[in-house]
Length: 312
Image (cartoon, rainbow, N blue to C red; front, side, top):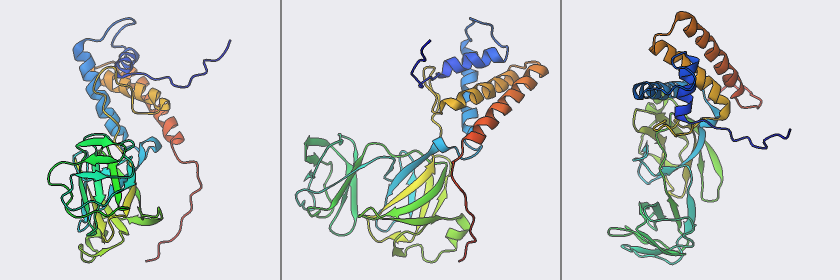
C-alpha cells in the first residue's frame, strides 16, 4: 500500500475538545458536547495554551521583528496599536524628490503596497515621517492623508511600508542594529536595573543596549542611547504569543508534534473541572506529563553551546 505523501495533518479546536472529553470519560462515542461544555473547554484550552508559553522558550514561538527607530525616542511601545514595528516589511526609495507638505509621492516601486498600509519616509532633516497609505495610484506612486510630509525627501531616501504591527512579545531574546548597508551590530539585552543605571537617557548614538518590559497589553522597549540615524533599524528575536482559539474551526497555532500534549493536558484539566474519579485524573496527569516531556526535550536548538566569562 502506498503512503499518503502528505505531512500536513491538523486538528481544529472543536475536534480537540471532543477528543479531550472522550479521554476524560465525560462523553461517549458519537456524543456531542453541550454548548456549555464546549465553552468551558474552550476557556480551559486557551488558558492552558497561555500557560504553556511560560514553560520554556519554544522554537516555534521565536520570530524576527523589526522596530523602526525614531529621532529623540528612547521608549517604544510594542503592540498592535503601538510603535511602528513589524515581522515583515518592504524597503524602497523616493523616486522623485518630494517637497514638505507633499501628499503624492513617487517611489521606486509600490509592489506589495495596499491602501491603509503603514508607510514611513526618511526625510532630509534627519527625521522620519510615518503615516498610512491613502491610495496606491500606480506602480510607483502613493498618496498619503493629512498635511503631507513634514520635511522634504530627496530622491534616494528610504521608504518603508508594511501591513501589520506586531502583537506584544512575551520576551526579547536577542537584538541587533542593522544599518542602511545591511550590516548588523549586536545589541545587549539588559535587565531593568542595568538600564536604570545607564547615564543620560537622551544621549544619542548607535543603539547598543535594550531593556524590555512586557507589561500586560503593550510591551515597553527601552533603548540606549537614542538613535542618531533613522536609517538604522532595530532587529529583534522575540518570543511571540500563541494565537487564541476563538472559534470552533480554528486550527492550532502550534506544530503537529504538540497536538498530543495539548490533548492530554486539556483532558486532565477537563477531568478535574468535571470532577472525574481520582484514578481517571491520575491516569491523565501521567499521560499529559509524559507527552509534554517528550516535546519539551525535542523542542530545543540542535547546536553547540559555549560559556565565556563576561568581562566589563
